[in-house]
Image (tube, rainbow, N blue to C red):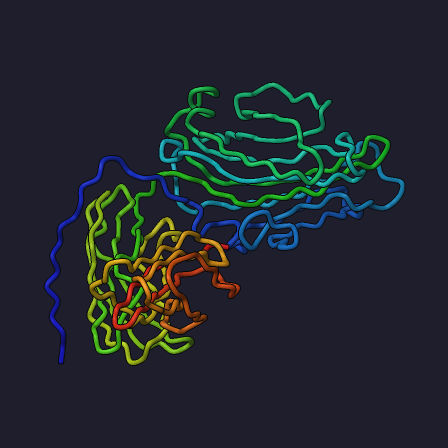
Length: 416
């Protein structure tokens, strides 16, 4: 039988667009194959190594890009020999400076001679804009004695001194302040590319370094971007009781989203056991609540609920998908007799639990995970405090105190 949906479209009008990460799919770390590599040297002396992925040195997430010009080239180098390595990405859609907000990333360097900053030349980042001419905005780090050149009509410089060896630095630059207020550029110029580079150079003795870049985000305002803000439906269910996935979605873009899909899936391990897809529309800078068809859980789970949006074009993939674990719990609360109480006083493992029972009564304390599986149980009397000794992973747990036919439960989130 074909289902007919009646969709109540009641968007919430917000005040002011939110910035999003314009580097798709979190850019450098998660989709680093889109970043190109290039080295420049005097032919046979090139010894640069450039890595899109350098997970052994990652600062955030799973990946770290690095450029290594430390390796000693051949002997008898020419005077003033130089070697550079670059990572860069060409943006294939026009994005004007007025649509950009901030540039966020982390960087570090390892010197050829440990602890000696003057053994390195420089490394940094370049934003290349175009308004007919090419205008380059350079953020770069060099040795303490480095004297940067002055700005030119086509080069705008933001020099700084490199940190200690292997010391990660977090950078957030307001592009409007830097390039419009300080450097006097026009809001109408368009971003063309972002380049990360590391440089080695020879002044009678070889000098080089390895530079790292990680946690890279280009924040700004998208024309077309829809995404999932949060899953509103609960994280527990009961066999025989329908579970309806409910989510909040948003149009983060400047333009109306006239046609896109909101899709949900429920997985039992590696098996897909539920799917539903709804067409949707959203005006610019509005959000809405989506309710999917009921899911009838065949077992106690646990399950993985995933919700995603799909629209073409979409300038930011980072907010397109959200997942959560849902499990079964048959634990319910009843009317409590006087003197029965339960309090979980810790969010760390082991859990610390305080309890009290009516005078002369005995009871049990039981610890369950989010699926209803019993982890630990102990007998208790009178009142007091106890610890569950199990080593618990991060997640949602339930503590139940039973005394005769009376039961009291408390849900707790463990963080490790």
